[in-house]
Image (cartoon, rainbow, N blue to C red; front, side):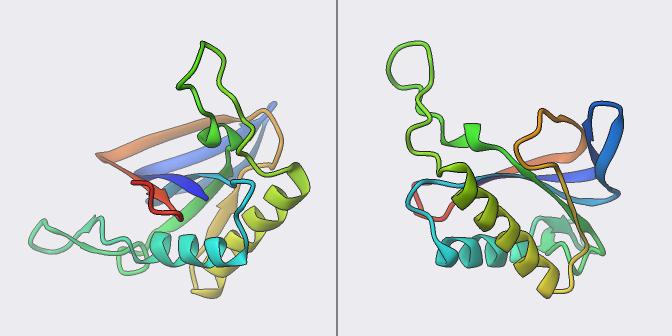
Length: 149
């Protein structure tokens, strides 16, 4: 499972003319599910996202997690994070999970975040979405449950 986590002042997702998910301050998370991912990867990812200390404390240091900062999470599915563009000009998405499996693990990750008491807004799985955000910092962190980076 891969994620791009951005600390944001605000973020929203639109499908067509309607807003399907929006948050104020918090984390915008683009989440891709790999073919070999399972419930353990979702649990690892939820724990990591919830506990990332990337919000400023009273001394201006990045020592607070999203809960301590009073933030929310906007969780957006994005299978293209699994794209492999090392060869040729067209990325291969062979390592991305099939839709049904990806949908289930995406939903599980969201539920696990909610169980931690976090407010979670969602994109629309499988839809063409327009994501708008104001990156705060900017702070962007890459996560991979197989610890590739």
